[in-house]
Image: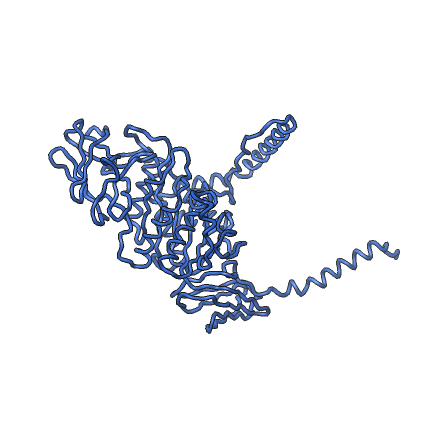
Length: 521
């Protein structure tokens, strides 16, 4: 038999060497915790602490934290999990995770952990917010730790992410969620314990993307979302080919423009709905929430809704369902869930009008009223006619912090602005009653604004309103027999009713007339 050329013999030996060297690596999988367990992590105080990861099937894993030690054996799938007993706030600790190898996590703190999630107004960075330069310069605080989940949608629940904890400071805070950071800073100052913030947010995304598939498919009211997605999956291969062709044409158009020395500002074509699209139902739940389970935490803050405004009536069901899906998967009870009502946006209209954004705010209000252990931060004073991303994030985070002090930490403080409770008609005027009237109602201006009134004809007109004790009396000479009142019912509400605790009243309506989105699915 003819001998192989030297080059081929050398290549064969190299391949054999590679195989032999790699065999031990294939036979051994080092013990490895998921990404939430890194240097600088914050673990939830006074709660059981799950720690989990992967190793060789059958490998013994021992986790040590301070004087605690817990051990287990990796299952046939290589997964392991232990549970450490509750620890009071403090640190830094060293956590050791040992199997056939040994991992040492340094500078681990015990304190309060919060999940920060939603779409672009939660994703919005400190660097892009008001007073950014000063905020960043003064951000150094080793008692605050930051963890950012990579933005990804997945067709099935994902086990881990590529991320790590970081100590808060000028180098790490600029790209972090501004609402999350200002919330965490407020809490840390009030509680004086370490605070860990997990930022898992993705701009431009709808609530169904953050909801589990099991929850979406078990609720008849949400069936249109499921049906629409299943149809999109059937059409995905064909739509993907069309997208690739459109993308190629876009690139050629851009190249031709550059060759002519012209600016090319056209946006690339959007990818079709598919299993890893950021709008895919349950996609972000699978890719950005599931990997966090069962990490111990105190509660969640949420800022989203803009992408669902066109289906605001559906949001009345969808949003509580999303909250329930998170609570069910953690199986830790009704943890505090605090959210932000949509900010004012779009051109101010001087006359009453229907508004999908007003209907979305109403859906958020109804969620707070009907879903246990939730609270809503109203930000009618923080808006921008021309920008869906108002830059003032400090008051947003702080109002969420006030709600956390009440709901999560049991402080006896007022945490909400006035909330509409009931109405009565007296002598041609509507008397409105409110809850959350701490110390009384307050008008921040010469006179109350934002109230409209209608009769049986449902034709709303601007109204006069005045504070009388803990009520607001609304009237108009054009409506001698009033039937309903609305407050702040607009894309951009111009309102000034507050309570003396310094919190603004939520927009509301006393009627239940069908709105713009009543039939939107």
